Length: 470
Image 1 (tube, one colour):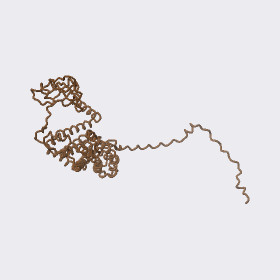
Image 2: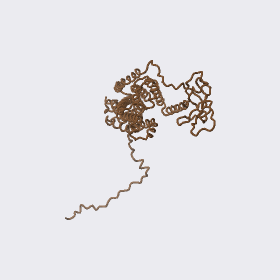
Image 3: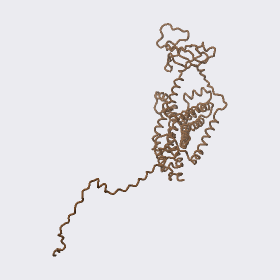
Image 4: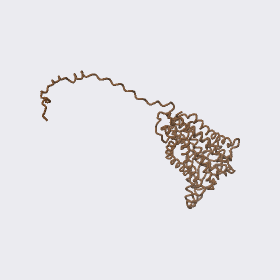
């Protein structure tokens, strides 16, 4: 096809004249001004926590005892806890009133050891065992026993200021007194004989009042230094426990009341007073009280059943001495069960308070958890705690029964006979029954705490809470 020449543009390309050179300052001056950016909206601030709750609302829960500030319980929860705990507290108080020996004279031991007096050792010499006025002539025979002759200056009692001399055979069971020792003597004579008759006195033991008071003071200082106000409350709870034991439990048992019933009533008063004094009046403390009560009842039932099943009598050297001193019979098996209940109470308090606090802190950290998830999370914390708690109880009982264990180990009979003996078998029942109660206290307290905590308003007003949506 022939090419159309008209389509050919053969004209020369016109040259565009170059723009005049401008400096950077001129270009900036001629640039149109930028439009100002709109201001950024302020970031939303997190809402202030409501009064009465700690600011660390979502701190991870751990092994705690709930000593910090706690949320006030709702009216519904307070009513529920009051309905559950009021009959139990009333039963404990009624038990104390009924079992206390009102108006009865204090029991007196049938085997009096005399009036205690104090003295200081001024001289201690080892020599032959001679009566006052005797003199040894010649050498002592090789098998002759040696005695420790002690001179004591009396510092109290009818013969205060007098000096007496006592000779004691040197045996493995005899204390070794030295010059300067403060001792306790028993006086069984009359006032006229006190200053002149050494036979009216028997050296019994060392004086330990000052060292024990010093140790108690160090203990109180350590508790107050670490716990401060909480430590002061703990010391008040400890004083209450000692008062209940000394003023109610011991007099009631000595008066002939059933030891198990006395221990249950006394443990109830100790538990209510100690827990509320130490941890305050709150829903979690009330749940811990409920968990402790249920676990104590389980311990009592198991120990009563297996003490009967294993035919434990409770008769050991201590209970035999008690019966001989009182002059009347005592339910020694009930005495054994009372010791189980009171001994397990201290460890149960620790476990139940920890579990109740764990449930509340887990719910505070994640209010959207279901009841099953909350229970499972708290139970995992309890599994870590229960192992150490059981080991604590076992070692406490083993330490108390160490002399019995040593004597049994020297008996030369088989292990089965040793474990089945009265002294060892009662310690086994005591330990295992208490340990079962401690293990059971974890799921029991966790279940109770989950049930109560789920009926509290949601910490953040979450609509998934049963009451938070109201």
